[in-house]
Image (tube, rainbow, N blue to C red; front, side, top):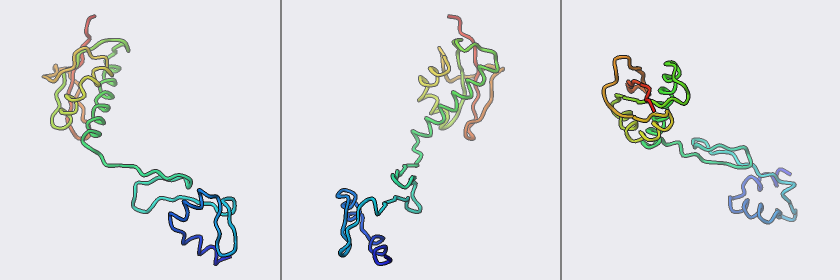
Length: 153
């Protein structure tokens, strides 16, 4: 039996694929089927692969600047929504947002302005000088300041 185990363990990817496709294979004079030999997948060490033994998925975990800016935009939406709630705005209230942010956060907010405005129901969403009763926050170490005001319809 150990002789068969060694030969099965030494199978190449192509041999395994052929076995899976045909459903059987011969080792020396003995015929084996998929019911007798189970094939499990496991991730290679050092990769971003996840597996449940039957399927393996390799994930691309590289953070591109586009993904980072999208994350910043979602964080800004979260901060503004919290401020809306804390300031007593109704869920359906339309607002104006004036913000100040620098660096990549400011670029992300400018680039994703339509998305952010849509999520927080902002009729006006613009960079500028927030009012003196502004909300000060930090997103991933980047300073964010914004003010909210109710917009009459």
